[in-house]
Image (cartoon, rainbow, N blue to C red; front, side, top):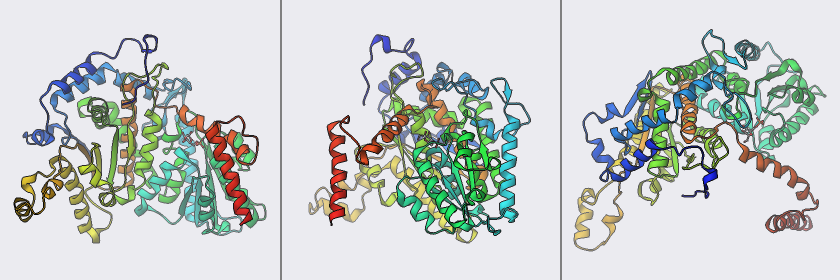
Length: 557
Ligand code: F6P
């Protein structure tokens, strides 16, 4: 475990005492706990699972017992999580390093109440923008809004990166059964392969381009946006603006880029990039699934907000999910968690949650700038089941590192004729959590093999087949991956990140680590192009020189 050295002056206020200490003592002093044994206690599933409408969270296949849960709930009190939650919803500037409120939840607010930020009700503007998005969407779907040459639009490209890409891209794939005509494509990487391979399949005269960037200055996005704009200009005799939309907080920059002001959908700086899918950044999703399904997506998220705000912590799924995270990260010391959707359409959910979670909680300074005293956000990674089973699950079952697994699976699929495949998917998902928990001991190795072992013809073979078990997992089970369920799941992950951030005492809403790389890339660009690199370290200078040599050789050959 890495911990920067701390000194007295660096330690934040009084050490976060009692509950942490009690939890650590409880973990160290209890006799070794076997998840199998815990799970044989009658009523455990009822006590260590929580259900709300169409969603069940099971955390009974973990090493938590009821005492752990009580202590973790005390930690919620000690860290004033509920007060901090209410501060977030009240529009307080809880993103202290940027002096901003954190109000993405207002984008999905379904009540008629005012939502105040700096004493100003933000709901009229949010509703107005949503109405404009819907109007655009409906006009595109009905064919009322035509191309520069008077035809129907067939394709949309969203150009954005990070929060301006991952959310809509993941959700658009997740909701394929709800797609309505327009084909939506996503370009994020500054690698020319991405924009090139996308554009070459499309007809510029039938394509709408959305440039999505909160700041409208992210170098990857602006580079790709310029390529797409030239592609449109060439095909449309300079009329690219008929095919351009911008989604941004920086309206003036979007206008300077050449987007007509009525085609700019703006949002405020109190919506963080990775929390922005609920507003204009969700436009490509809305264009893919239609405005009424997008409404259902927002309603689902709002239901989760409501549950998070109003349920008792012991029955509050975001809080419980966060507490399982804290238990695994800080008490058991596990460095990563695997997100394993048994839902092919959620194939990009791990990438989305990676940004949401790791950009938010990958911090080693607390919100007062002091070094943290405990580990913060873990590595988040994953792949859809069952594909992952045939790749890295061997390592999960028999490897030397324990990784808590977070399974997601639907009770029903969207293909009534293929119901049997959903049963198979469910069986696989449940088999994995069972196998991780129960493992396989030598006595359950098939008899013929044991006989061979007894004859000593294959020494050690039976042992190699054993799996230790005792490996933790949780399962999120939902009825069906519809727009409302997806909204609920994403809001759940957002609130989990928030609760964990509160408990670690960090600001989950800035990302200064990412900013450093962006600045350096800008300075390195002229050096890659032959400029003076003498200010750089020896390794970087060597690599720049090697790029030059490789290019020269390629030119000679
Ligand atoms: O990855 C860093 C980051 O700042 C993210 O937080 C953000 O989602 C992404 O870059 C894109 O930023 P923008 O929307 O301003 O182009």
